[in-house]
Length: 289
Length: 125
Image (tube, rainbow over all chains, first blue to last red; front, side, top):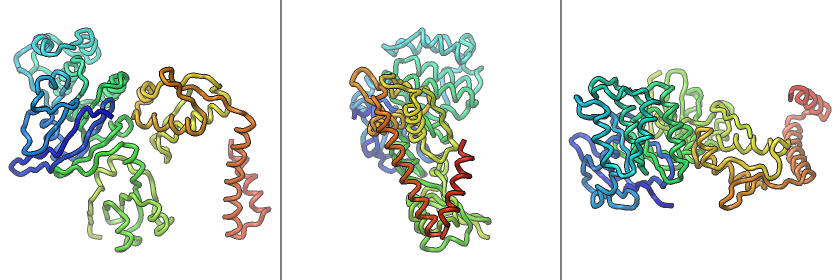
């Protein structure tokens, strides 16, 4: 399988934040959700791809090409929506578009115009007059009109209402029809990815906890709930993460059969959501009784 | 083809697709040679992962429900109705013998079991 994007041991040290060497890949033609709490390193990974910051070690390959050596060539094939889109504040949208389009050989003006209609964007208005949601929509309209083969979206849905988020997911599904377009989508709102994402990469505290097909992740983990009295040292060992509160506990397990054997109907076992995985994985949270 | 996915279902999405497509083939709602949407088109329409859809189609192919013809698409495979019925009956037998085993363990009499089944049968539709 051809990879649209490969992280090969890429690492970054900031003051107060370290991204451990990250190695994973996004196969061409699929959607990957990059999930993790705020401050986990999602934006750092994304900025490394765009070469907005430099890594301290490792490499990134986009479309099989080293992202530093072939930067220009790669960038015209990437559509990027930052978490806080920034353009020249005093310029009207139509002029920002006019300044952007010539950089992209596959620019699709008809598509841009239809997106402007769909997103209800005021082309004559200056960028600074836009609401936060409109800024994101404008950045999306540009990114989706570039004929990009890789879309990199940094928290694109966080400032948007549910109706628009739904629209966006539909558009992404549409883009994937050509079997070539790939999407890297970072978010802490996992519900957006629960269904549509093909792969999930979970990052926390600067470390990749896992990167795997989403179905595998959702098949692997079950959520177990029960009273505190069923927890002892042995049963605790069955959990990949656990939260104990006054009235009981919630545990994440990849060993549901063993849990069923040992705890039987003293616990409720259900499928874990991505949110459950994100919140509980490798967690040991105890609240005093 | 009609597919309704539930996020509240305990079954994974791919299983929900497999079950519903299989049921429509067995009931005759889908017949031999009917084309199915492409994997990517179905993923788009249901707003689910391409990998999930692919997995469902692969499972249905393994069961002999679907055929994929390279370059042409995926179609409902020819089904032998008697063979299908036999296969389904075998599943019923297997499930029943499981129930009987459990009933024996608990000392449930054949009459009580039959009564339970009669009640369940009434509820079933």
